[in-house]
Length: 69
Image 1 (tube, helix red, strand yellow):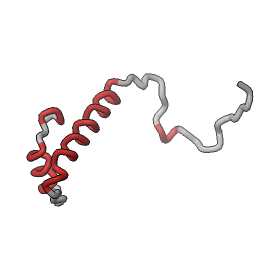
Image 2: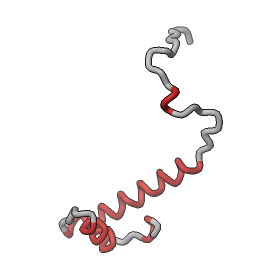
Image 3: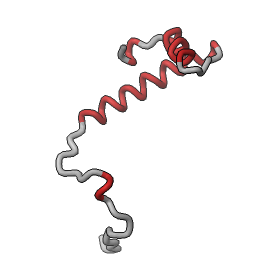
Image 4: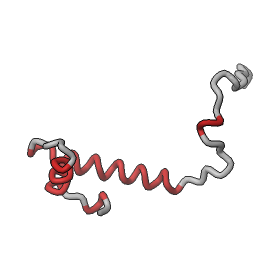
């Protein structure tokens, strides 16, 4: 199911299945937030990280700080 199809009652049902019962006045807000998160993740999935090294290759303190602009 895509987040664009998530209705407030479905959001309540999925939250209840996860053990997080929602008050009735929160159903619409949760569905809206779920849609927003889905749209952000969809954009991130489209990014091409190409030559970006994986996080484990980053070493704290090895970057060079240069105050010049």
